[in-house]
Length: 301
Ligand SMILES: [Zn+2]
Ligand SMILES: [Zn+2]
Image 1 (cartoon, rainbow, N blue to C red):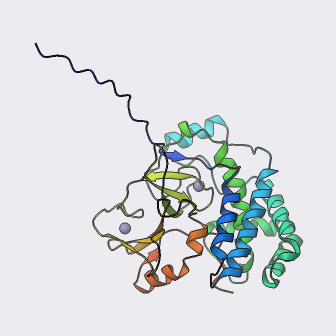
Image 2 (image 1 turned 120 degrees about the vertical axis):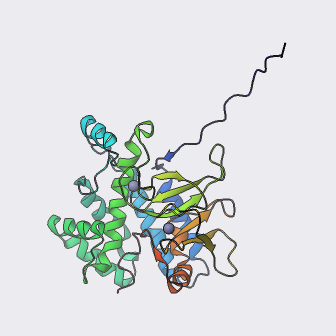
Image 3 (image 1 turned 135 degrees about the vertical axis):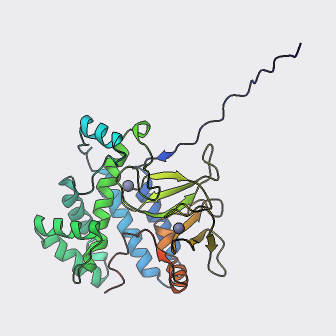
């Protein structure tokens, strides 16, 4: 008689498919990262200012009350239809106050160009601010609005990060389109290969708007799902913490940051500190698949 084999090993802890943003630390950590990356960087002043902007986002989020989520019936309907629960076209009115708070908080320390944009945002009425938000989220930029948009984006990030953090992760599902956020449907800014129990070496895409992360396979294009024609590019002299994953099937790319190389990497801050890598892959003919909302409009000034 064969002895019965009993497996006493507990089942391995399952990796979370979706990581909701941690509101107490997210923007504060990003602010620290921008400040660290600014030191000795050719774009140091700009990165330093983005650190102050992230700090202002942190302050605004700290004082933001819980926001109204869609009702149970809407959440259920979104689930049934494979749609994200948060609709970015429906913004909580609080976003405009968050924007004004960020603009006041940055105050006199802002560089001249930014100061002008912040003053015009503080003087703007609600309708104009909503129009700027529509412009930003539709991706259809008009000349003239550009300089204000990173601040509009910063405020929208705060309210959508708050909303995402209030969702029940166990009720969320990944969408058919792997490249978009399961909470708000926005494209990813970059992906992160994580360190830590249960998520070690797993890759997560990071939402450009609400900072939610969702698990995706490594070495697979996040735009078209092929695993055949992807390659990793990096800048010479780089320590490997930031690479660009290019895909020859769809000619797109997105950056990957590696916590194993530097545990403090941040998908938004490290992305903006490596614009030279974007130039390199742009020149090779690849199109970036997701935006960094703090940069939108910054090129055209
Ligand atoms: Zn999102
Ligand atoms: Zn592809």
